[in-house]
Length: 241
Image (cartoon, rainbow, N blue to C red; front, side, top):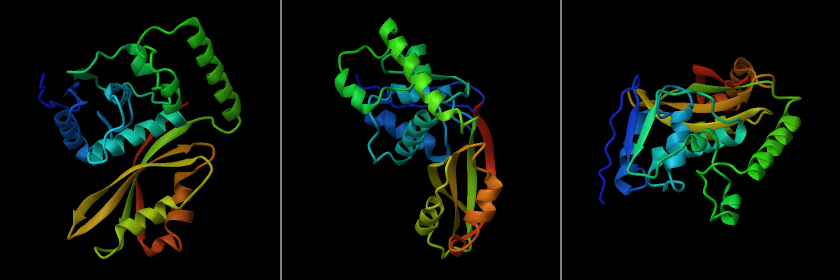
């Protein structure tokens, strides 16, 4: 059955996607994410997990916006999970997605190789529940000393002029490595007069990283200020208490 890839959306309402595993469905999703970082709203939510879980595999790199979003959500799931409620999303033309699939991040690639016959969307067995609890306890024990909470931050990074090499600017920004700092998805946004700014997501551990200090002592000093004129915080959302 050849399902069309049509998307109807309103940021204040639920979003509907059709057959996201087909080329036409991925193209519509790619167009939808062109000017968006997330499926709905301005922070990662269960709507992103719903669409993420509906994709049978990582999207092809030809779908630039979907790949950028997919990798960012995958990174968030590895780091801290996603807690936002979202506005609601419906997937049609794909296998139905259960509550467990939305609440639980997909298994790693290594686990997929060993568990090809496992029903990922079925009810958890007692053994699976016990294993999940043990993994959660292990992660909590290893991180509780330094991670009291995390935040998702969207930064605007502005160049000096239209002659600034934006590729080198982004490389310079991502060259900053701090404990508790994880860079995420990024895109270039037109400002005017041929000038573009870099919008980049990052996840920080609140007790370890100060955004103001990051900007003042790392992103706007030598050698990075050869490319970066200024940085502004566009959005700041708590994602983990």
